[in-house]
Structures are given as C-alpha cells and as structure tokens.
Amino acid sequence: MKKFISIILCLAMLIGTVAVSTHAQQGEITWDGDPVVFIQGYTGSALVKDRGLETEAAVWGAGRELDIAKIIISVPGILAGIVLHAMGDSSLLLSSFGALAEDMLGGIEILEDGTSKYNVTPYPYYAEEASIATLRANGKEDYVPEKDITNSILETVPAEYVFIFNTDWRLGQIDNSEMLAAFIDGVLACTGKDKVDIYALSHGGQTAAAYLYYYGTQAKVDNAVLNVPAIGGTTIATGLLGGNINFGMDEISRFLAVMLRTETDLRFLGKILPGDFLNGLINTVFSEMFLPVALNFGSVWDFMDIDTYTTYKAKYLNNPIIHGERIEKHDKMHYDCMANMSKGLKAAQTAGVNIYITANYGTQLGTGETVDSDFIIDTKNTTGAYTADYGTHFVKGYTAKGTNCSDPTHNHVSPSYTVDASTAFLPENTWFIYGQYHGQVYWDDYTRPMIMEMLLTDNIKDVHSDPRYPQFELAQCPVDGVYAKFTNEKSGYYNADSKKLLIRNICDENSMVITAIKADGCEFNLDSKKVLAPDEEMTVDCSKLSDNGCFIMEIEYKYSGSLLAQPMSRTLYFCEN
View 1 (cartoon, helix red, strand yellow):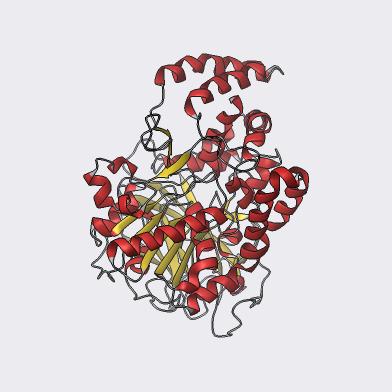
View 2 (cartoon, helix red, strand yellow):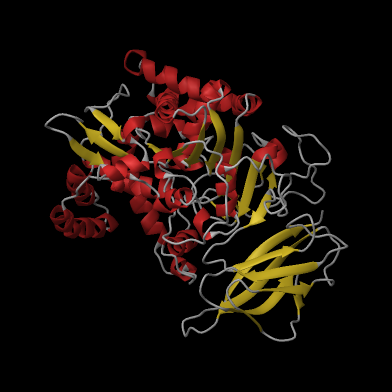
C-alpha cells in the first residue's frame, strides 16, 4: 500500500489542469439545443466502492473524507525521511509516505490482470443521475467538476441539459469509450434529443477521441470540443515509467506562479531550489513506489505513444494468461485507434460531427524533455502536428509537409515557425494557443469564448470560419502579461507591408510599464516609458526590422504601483509570411 502515495505526486504533475475562480463574461450565444456532455480530466472523477450496499464509501474525489489527523502525524516522519534520504537512507521516507497513503488511497487498487480489486464505479454513472440539475436536487453539487467550465456552459444551457460523464480513470480508453457510448445513449433517451455536444478536457479528450474513432459514424454527436486532449498520450508517461525525471526548476517555479494566479514571476525560485536533490528524491519515490502500481492502471498504458507501448509491453505484459485481456485492449487502442486517428476522426466528420481540437504550445514539458508542449502534454500528441523541439525553430524557408492538408492556399505553419499543422490529425479544425498552460482557457478572452461558440453553436466550421479566431494565437498567462502581434490580416505574422506591432496589457488588475522592445539586437527607442492600463494597447513602428525572414523579439516591462514589482520580459519569435 505504501507504494500508492506516489500517485499523488505523479498525478498532480502528470495530467493536472490549472483552474481559476474568475473569468470574463462571454458574449451572447444562441444555444443549438443539444444537451452537453462534459468529460473531465484525469483523476477528476469521483469513485465509489460498493455503491448501493451498506458498505458504500467514496474512495476518490468528491465525497472522500481524508483523515487530517493522520496527515499531520505523518509530516514529521516524511521530513525526517527527506533528511535521511539526503544521507543515503530512503527507508524512513518511503515508509512514512506509505503510512499516509494507507488512508488517502485505499480502495482504488487495480489487480495485475487489469480488473479492480474492489467493486468501484464512478459517480455519477447513469445518465439519469448525471445532469447538473439532478445533482443539485439530490444535494450532490460537489460532484460537479471544473466549476469554471460548467458555470460558463450554464450561462447558456439549462442545468437539466448539462450532463457530467465521469471516466474510471484507472482503466484504459477502450473501456471508457464503451462506457461513454452507453452514457450518450442514456442522455439522448433522457432528453428526447437526437444529438449531444461534447466538451472533453485532457484525459477526457483522449476518451472522446477514442469514442469518435469507434462510434463517431453513428452521428449521435453534433459538436465535439477536445480541449488540450491527450490523444496520443504524453511523453511524461515515458519519463515517469523510465525513472528518468528531470524537472526544470525554472519552469516548475513559473507553473507555480500560474497555479497561484499571481502576476509575479517566480522563476527566481528556480535559481535557489536544489534541483538535483529534488529530482533525485522524486525519482526515488517514483521508481520504488509508483512504478509497480502504475503498471496496473490501463490509463497509464494508454498515455504511452505507440513505440513506448511496444517496448514496455514486451517487458511487463509478458504473461498471456494474466495479461491477455489487457494486451488485447491496449493493442486495439495503440495499433488501431491511435495509429489511425486522423482517418477515424475524418470519418466522424463525414458522418456530420463537427470536431474542434484546441491545443497549446511554446512551453517545455514539465519533466524536462525538450519537446514543445503545454507543460503537461506534448503539442504533437495533442494534435498530431509535427513540431520543432522546444527552444528551436524550423529552418528559414521551411515548407509545410502537407501530410493531411496539401492546399497551397492554406498556411498551417505557426508564426513562431515551430508547428506545422498541415500534419495534424485535422489541420482545418485544430487551433493552437501560444504560451498557455494545460487547461488554462479561463484566463483568456480569446480561448474561452471561442470554445463556448464551438461547443454551443454551429457557427464555426473550421479555422477559416471566423477572423476573430485564427488558427494560431497568443494567449493570456498571468506571468506573461504582454500580448503582441503584427497588425495585418494574417494574425501573428509580419510582412514587408505591415510592420506595425500591437502591444496590449492582458493582465487583469495591474498597469504595466513597457521599458524596451528589442529584436535581433536592435533596440527600438520609445519616446517615453509607456504605461498601459489593464487591457490598454499601443502600436509600435517596427520599420527598422531587417527583412531576414525570422527574428526574435523581446519586450521588457514591469508592473507599476507595486514596491515588489520586478523587471520582466516576454520573448516571442516571428516569421515573415
């Protein structure tokens, strides 16, 4: 049991989402009338043991009460264990974590054959009990996840038409997609409607993608919005299972600032945190405590890309008597569904399903791999698109590969020259937001209303439908308060005829002082230190830019009115088009 504790550490960093408590009000939207099925991210679903029996108990998520006294009692042992670990003895550290896990994670074990040790099901499970109106009426509103997302949907859709689908996140996606198919049938029966709309987040996006692959041609879905979906898994899973975790302290510090919803850049913490020691500690905990447990969770296997799955299957799923059913399901997910995802999603589109994939890029993966990502999931695995490694760019003059879109009039290469969306699963139906962390849409006045319009209306068909929502956009992040793009019809790019740079303060509360704008070593002299109030913007004449095709721009600024304000900067990469 002590091995379970690392699940807390892993899942918090693995497929967590960043949620906030406030967001701007969306504009007027005319609902299409379809009931909405919300599929949340990894580990968010409430799990109940022995439902309907006298022994019924919540074992995960809402309704699960932790023994705070036991948690407090375990802290001294954990701290002492960390000290002894630094001296070469990890036994106290592992045993102290294990004692805490006994209370926190009991009841969710998965056996080696892939079945649950206990009689555990998600709640809500049936469509009849899963609408937000029914949950409220039964005093179960705590079971409504991601309140920011659901409240935004409820601004337009009546509560009796918004349904919560909870996956059993311990299982693989073949099982979960089958359960989703039955759930959607239940929603249609409850509401008398012909179709549903789906909003799916992260791991839920992988569930929805598997459903669309296997059941999409049944045309029971009108709009399906997959927000930062783990369609192809995540490289983080490979790092965790390989015991080769190397968290970048700067990026972790920045992510912490985002989670705290602060406009203070905490990256200075990365310079003082003992990175080598912390990574060694985490690797010890994962390899000793997490790996044996993780290998029984079907979801972890489906987070592996195809090559990693093949390697680990040969190593760990090598007993056909015990692992036979698991192998069959994971083979189906990887070699059929994941290997042919583009074809399957296009088949669902042909059947009438409007599919929208929203992804983030421009951030290093949390576990230190140099892949472009949203900190949690690789941009490539979210979208299928070919990307440059994090910190690099395509060569000057790069030509799109055109794997899934070869139309020469469609420009699917990002302004940063790091994403080639012509290779994506759905090039015409995938939107990329630069600099936004995983699940962070509700800080952003671009992404949030776009997603709601995709979900609840039939107004947007593809990336060419609405100039307000270009395929590539720079989004809001509390520690990246500067928004900048060139003012022409090709949003984000610059060209010889348009070198006017638009700069906006996208912070919610603080004014900022723009102190310098630099590109390729050339500093643009401002007439004065420009102060921008929240949401105020300015334009800068960038006619001095050399016509060399691509350049790096750094905008230096700091927040005004605070004694603790420190100089900050945002570095952006632009290419001519």
